[in-house]
Every structure is written in structure tokens, then in C-alpha cells.
Image 1 (cartoon, rainbow, N blue to C red):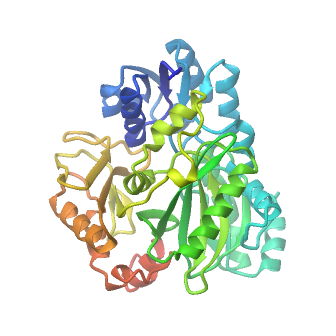
Image 2: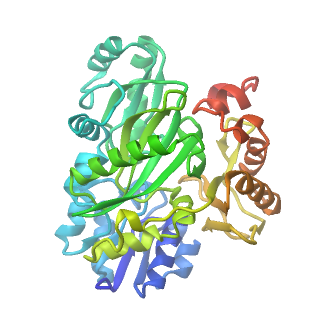
Length: 456
């Protein structure tokens, strides 16, 4: 391993995840932090830490200059961006490289081509991968958006070209709604990712949301199967599982081949995820975007493959080739991840930051918890509401569901409202057990009569 030290340019559970991978590889981890995160667990567990600014993302985790200065001050070898913030920002990757450092992620050109959702759509079309009808480039203004949407037909989806996680993504049911909402979607994207560019895509519903995990070394690409991310609200994923219960072996072969072919077309290096919407009845799929970073839900893939994806990222960044061929990747069992967010699921999933007064994590066979939280921790109001990722593995889906029920029952967290009860209710839904759900299931089935349904 040629990397001796890495700056962790993120916060929360993903920062802690990277720190742990570095420690196991014998790499020094240097954690950056905002003024709001000075007492956070990543800061406590890192080898060193550096304050980079004020509490808001713009003052800290989105401040490219502050991050580069911190890396230079710490004299690290590399920078790991985690997910969110600047993790899909080609200019940041270029700045890291220009500073003489290694960027733990794809080449900047690959980020531009694939991390930009509109550009990735064009590449997919050129590669013969099915895509949903939409604008070939980001829209210049509201008039162009209206013209394109009228040609596609309503409803349409407005999506941020940079970033992901549902931010800057809105369903527009009419021209009036599009005119009123386009600027808000663009502003939301700019605040989250530093770019307000958005594009238009035909909104297809009901569908499943399935993604394929790939890792490349610049020469070859292998996939690590698919994850089903269908359970979501406002395009924010709530539960993920692998393998997808509706993907047949034939569909899996087609989707994973398309994912690898598309990644190879840009000589992809590092971990990445290609996202698709799937018509389960017809076994058809459409490419929607690629995330050129590690995903929030990567632990479910690690559970069913036994591969540490973050360590693999670091090894590839250090110049090592992929240590396996596709035939070497083995899949076993079923994994489920529940996102435990500090949100009130009965009040439109409104964020509920505050102080955690009691916290006991579930444990036992096949249970994993990725979290930066601890008892007495004050959840800052400035960032994502994710408290923990609760992951279980077992031999099959039914057994994994039973194990997740047990794990959720063991979880004791007081002081803030979380989505624990939502997940317990979801797992008891007969339609979920039967895998008969769509991306609208939470809104249209679980909360069909709820007074705050409009917020989902």
C-alpha cells in the first residue's frame, strides 16, 4: 500500500467508515470537521483532525479551498470525499490532483461524463443502454424546460445534473407546476452540490428502483450485483436490499452487462453505482444515472459478497489493479439496510435534530450498525438527518426480514424521534413481504390516508 495518510473530506457515518478502512490498511486518517462537528465520533477516532470552517456546508464541507489547504497542512497523500458534498465534483477532484495529491475516486473526466446525469444519459444512449425519454442536456431556462416537457408529456421529473440522493429532484404534474417549481429545484441542487444545472426526464410510474454496484481500475470493470432501492419517499431511499427480489437471472445478466459496458466506456476507476428503473412485470430496465462515488447503501453489497468496497477504493487509488475477475465474485444470502434517520415519519418525515439521551445498538449474528452517533451526542441541524445504517444478513430474504425485525426491536434510542417505527411498520406490510411494491408504495399505500401525505 503506497498511501500512508488520507484526508477524510466528509463527516458522519461515512467519515467513520473511511477511518476504519484506513486503520485496517495501516493508513493514517486525518479528519476534517466543521465547528458543529468538533465533538463528533469521527474526530475522536481519527489519527488527527483539522477544523475547516463554520457549521454550514458552504463554510466547511463544500469549501474546496479549505479542504485543499487542510490536506496540504496535514501533508497527506490522498483525499477521500465520501458521499454527498463534493464527492461528485470534478473541479474538486482536479484541485486535489493539482495539489499533488491522490483523489480516492474516479478521474475528473469520468466524473464529468458519468457524474453529470445529463452527460451520462447521452453516453448511455450512445452505448445502446435503454434510457427514459428526456432532455439531452441540462435546460437553459424555464422556457426550454416547458418546451421539452410539453413534448415529452406530463408528468415529468426535474433532476439535478450534479449529485444525487433525491436533492434537486421534483415531479412536475403540469406546465404551471413546472414554471413555479423549476427554480426551487435548481436552487436546491445548487445548495446541495454547488451546481444548479437540472434536466428533464419522463416520469415513469409505478416502477422499481434497482442499481448495480461496479468497481473499475481504469482497465477492467467488475460488478458486485444489484441493490433494490424501491422503498423511498420524495426520491430519498429508506430501505435497500440485495439481491433484488424481482430481478430474474436473465434480467440481472442484461443489467449488469449494461452497467459494466457503460463504466468501461469511460475507463472507470474506483467504486461507482449505475441506477436503473425497472418494470418488474415486463422485466424491462432504463438507465437513469450513475453515482461516481461510494453509496450510502454499500454495506448490503458487502454483506452478500464479502468484499470491502472502501478498502477496494483505497487500493485502486494507490495504483493497485482489481484483485479479482468477474468469475471470482461470489454471492451468498440476502442483506437488508434500514436507514435510521432523525425524522418524524408521522409528520411528513420532518427532520428532528436534537440530543440523543439513550442509545443501545442491536447486535448478534448477522447484524451490522454503521453510525457516528452515541449517547449524549447532539445531532446538528445543518446536515443530513441520517443517524445510522442498520444492516442485517441471513441465508434468504424471509430470514433477513425476520432478523431485521429482531434488530429493530433491540434498538433503544431516546431523545430524538427516528424512523425506527416506520421500518417496523414497513416490514409488517404483506406487500413488502411479497415484494409487491413500487417507488410510490410509501406515499400511495402506507400513507394513502395520512393528513401529511402531500409531504411524501
